[in-house]
Image (cartoon, rainbow, N blue to C red; front, side, top):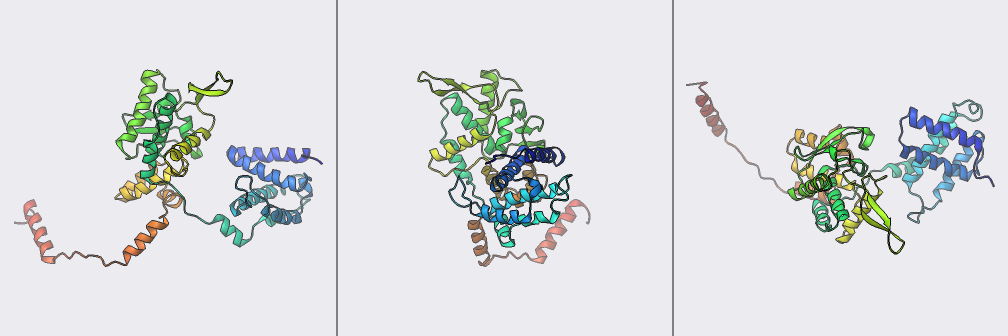
Length: 367
């Protein structure tokens, strides 16, 4: 049984280059497309893409709906089905216009990868996100040990994400030069820092408490003054591993390099929350925690705009739409509160006139 098709591999390579260079997709997106195509090829036993027929798409949809996730042990979610089929649809739409394939099938054949309207609505429905309260985050931070160098790094990393709302990939790639303790800010420079959409922007420390800011400041000072590290050294260096006396790998301090991915950061967060008996919240969830804090703290549209901009959002609607939904519990409190009678403060018109007259006389406008 064949395990690949040389012709398919060649055209897939052309498509991946198109996605990366022409459509400007990142490696994560290209990898997702490759996975979708691999699933389809495995189902068709690596039949030539040129032999594609719409009945294959219909049959594959049914097959995919019966597949079980290796992670959850249950059938694939509607969201996974929708994403996989969307990748395949776009690929075959592109393929239908390529030389050697134009006469083999029609553009409309790719439409057979569509899910039903019902399943699409289920797949794309917005669901309430789970994120920790500020009290839970600070409780987890307070429970993190700081005895060893590695523990100090882990605690400072946790505090830094709370202080700046930076994404884990950005934090993993930050350098010492990006932190300005005097200004209370971090410059997320896309030339060095892996920011979303490669945007460069300045984040000022959120008002989450002096103790949080102090942990980050102490860590930066430690790296600069005790370890004598410079501007281009990593803010949160990777763990150095050695072979111990028992011939097993073990941690042995820090090395002067960045992590290759953000996976260790998620491991640190998992350990921090579990150590104090709380469920795991990923690093990204703290951005929702900060949005909730901003909604309670900001008093004017300008203040919330600054808060949104501090998270790297170009528009306030991004903050509201992606992070700012009212949680179900708070929604109930608001609706129930609207049923209660409100106190109305009445101000006498004569009192207002007296105040106005007094101010005009004091300013010399009238005698």
